[in-house]
Length: 431
Image (cartoon, rainbow, N blue to C red; front, top):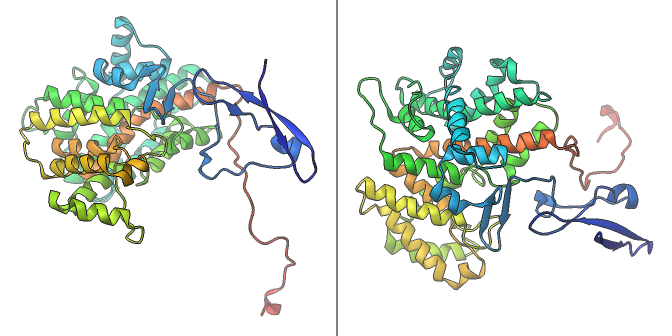
């Protein structure tokens, strides 16, 4: 028996039946597509926090329970037992690959890692102190000027080629943005290296001596990519879908996602965590900082805690905490002051009734910034790394949207609060 809810308009006394739709897991949704035509009303939902804008089979989040699934697989299992190429295949195609499929997919991605040589010249047009995200927005958007053979979004094969190109070239683009900022020559990708190894090589290698990839750091980098690969209908993913709904090419859509991710409330949060820890300065100043956070008049936020969706411990944060210890141990960093502050801050926050009552648990950004800093990345690169990893999710969500028969161009409505119709007054008669 199909479910529905009854809405009653108290002004007119009329009632309306609204269908209820059920997914495979998670809360049911009220189908309001005919709400305006039937009732003359729109819904009002700033931030779309109570609105399901699409159907998706890719990622499921239960924020109350702290659960994150990609195609049904728990993020903890994927981070522990898979590598990024395997997870990318899963997110894109719906199933984990067998050995042959995984080898072919990794090889196909590898063969697309180089950029068109003319793109290298784009970088010299940016100032040396340009933020890497500004560079990535420009370069990724410009890819559509070079790869005309993968712009037809109605052709599944061209969509696949564009998807592979974006996933493959994003590490090259990000690494080149870093190299340009520090005045070092670009390092071309090496086909014998894995996805994460190649990125570390292109970022930290130099032509004058061989670069040996540290396997512990490569594993940590790979795991960071997995943890950031997709996260349901967040701001940047919604932007990619909204851009794609107009028929825009995939390179333009991903550039739009990068621009959205750049915001400090989204992808820039791990950079904000490091700034917060540096501001605290030492463990003995944590109580004072906590006091300021609780004081609404201070306007001080506890960065890296709490999440728009998770009202429990972010499952990615548990994996990231373990990875943080592995990286610092490998690098011989035993007494990192920022880590000491972070650990103590986490301990206090998890025991303080103020934060517990507000369900402000550590999220993935809390430890990722410390890991990336220890590995040698400047804070300006943190969000670029996020964009690199999230490209897989963006591409999968974009493809899913294109193939959705119910897809329409995005057109949110509004509650207008400006002036009603006013007569025009010529300038000479205005007071």
